[in-house]
Length: 320
Image 1 (cartoon, rainbow, N blue to C red):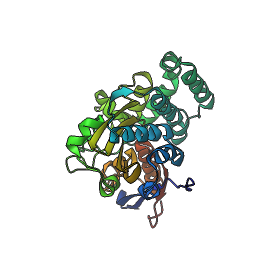
Image 2: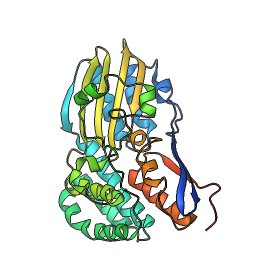
Image 3: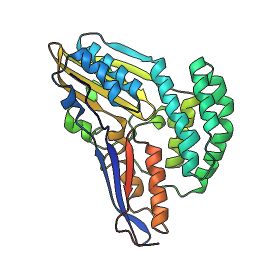
Image 4: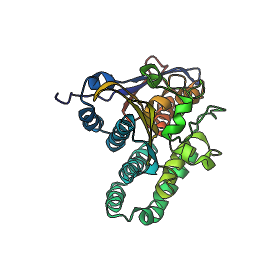
């Protein structure tokens, strides 16, 4: 079978500005049905195809697919840090910290530092480089973030811990399409990401904490790039990967050597749950005018960082 043309989807945020506050916040993740593309394919072919479907985190998706298939065949994987997945995640962090966050905060983009960082990732000298080279750009980002309005504290909204595949079995004995679309942790929407790997930063304001955790991942990547796999049952395997954006789960069901079913639960589905962190941050938050609302919404989207394109619709908001 030929590899199909694949659109990885989008996150759509809709909200309105009324009476000095953000109202009617609605979050929707639109995803294509990857399982439908994989069902009936030879298992090894499906695993080879999967990373080609994702322009972001392709290495993590590929490793998760390989490990899930191995577990379905009876070969578990104890938690280890995969060097390729780690490097991919650190490249993602560099892009956000050197290009996207400076642009969002009105700071100069740091293209030359991004090129240098990628070079150091390739030659094995990244840790020493990052500790020194990222100090100044991070100081600028931190100062700018402290100067912009923060969303209200999320209260007791849960943060998904870093989990190995075997640990996830007790929480979710089986994964299915409904869970993948709106995952829950003990029955509640939860967020995932670098902050779970650096809980010492939880005392910071919500946006600053999440961006600071990405910086911490560069210099002290506690569990970033960790991969694992476990058998769910004979012919069913699950893999867990700690990506830049958080926990990625794959579960494959085999019928002989063909794919009977496949479920992917990506960090984006956790972080952009319809009743999740983004809605909690924005609903009812103050904004002086519609333009300020849009800027605050964009910062919140960037902090949670979907792995697909994102759109903000402010529709019939009152003019500033």
